Image (cartoon, rainbow, N blue to C red):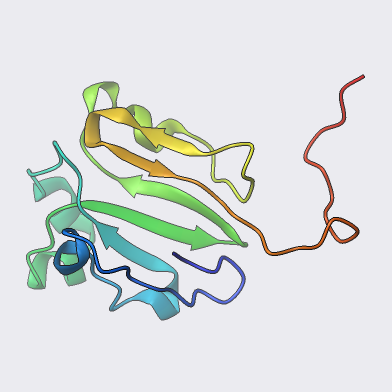
Amino acid sequence: MIDLNTNEYKVYNTIYKNNIDVSRADEGIYYVPGEITSNMEALYQIDSYARENQIVGIKLKVINHKISVVYQESPKNICELQDPTDSHLMPIVCLPNELVIDVYTNLTSDQFEPDVIMG
């Protein structure tokens, strides 16, 4: 879980916990496992940290309190094409890599501003 305002995080005790790299959390960068992301050469060319640490997985980045996928492998790179999100109503879904990024908030109902009003 990542706090989009502070970049603080919590890694849960799951089978994936050892595959998550949060060493660059202060920069808003996180690496998480992906089901089909395994050829990292393109990322290694532009990310020296990933190359030096032989990171294998999906690169996420938090910018302006929104999270996005900045590197992964999937057919037509559909995961990277999704807009950055800070909304529970707009999760990032990367089915080829079996990754879903969902945003949760601890705002009270009087603090919450809806993403859209339909009527």
